Image 1 (spheres, protein in one colour):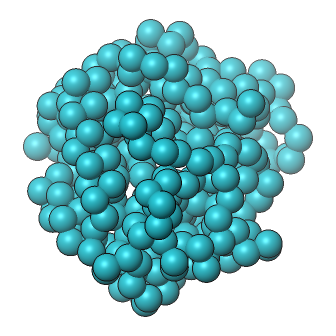
Image 2 (spheres, helix red, strand yellow; image 1 turned 180 degrees about the horizontal axis):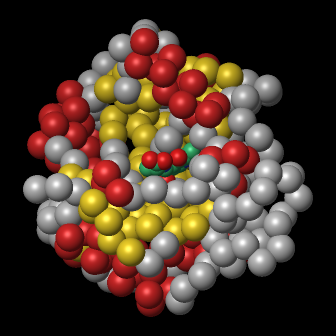
Amino acid sequence: MSRVAYVNGRYLPYARAAVHVEDRGFQFADGVYEVIGVLGGQLVDADGHVDRLERSLKELRIALPMSRGALTAVMAETVRRNRVRDGLIYIQVTRGAAKREFAFPANTRPTVVAIARSLNLVKAAANAEKGVAAITQPDIRWGRCDIKTVGLLAAALAKQAAKEAGAYEAWLVDRDGYVTEGSSSNAWIVTKDNVLVTRALSKAILGGITRSAILELARRLGMKVEERTFTVAEALEAKEAFVTSTTSFVMPIVSLDGKPIGNGGPGILASKLRAAYEAHAATHAAGGADWQAPFIAP
Ligand code: PDD
């Protein structure tokens, strides 16, 4: 079956789906995106993702050229036309196409693109059962990592370094030696006293929708949680480590820079949280979570 992309109001076969050569997303990374999970053909936590997309657009002063309802309908239709049951939808909105000038163009219509694809959940579950490796990399990104922009070069370089080291993810480390987040995930550790630790929301990290879900699920499971910075040394001393994201759910990290974390296998709390998240994702596909996703620093 040939794949179909949504581009500015039309559903087109991939071979004919294109944006302008002077699209500002292409020239300036002047755009934002979301990756939303699809389970059983339904979008997972769609409300939280659309809230975050609207917030990213607002921060960059890009006006979404359609209503929230229309956007959700476009995503659902892109999933349907590509016959995705379990996978993801990628939605990108840029400031649009205009003569290359740094300042914002006047009267340019934003570009909206949506793509859906299937994911191998069986392979993901196998990874989660064994746990995966991570490495550390310096965080060389810009000062507004809270905005989900398509400016992903620093993240791509970090992920490539991880791949070349045979690792699944790169944990980014700020100038003070604290872990910010993964290149495309949020980073968590579990201390010796069974306290879950993840960095607090700020401009230094993306407020993950999965991160919000896990914070809530952890509290409901009676786990202790601290939102604060932690160092690489603290991570190496931790009982467990894991990452969260739309595509990884909860993925146990069993080694960091080649050194084992805890007993070198997936941790108990990470496994419990993954099971809880899977149940949450299955029941909240198509609708919103039954809590407000906090993804903006207070
Ligand atoms: N990445 N931090 C960064 C830098 C990310 O790129 C992502 C998501 C996350 C986790 O956010 P969420 O739980 O909302 O997926 C944290 C997506 C999956 C991507 O770019 O493919």
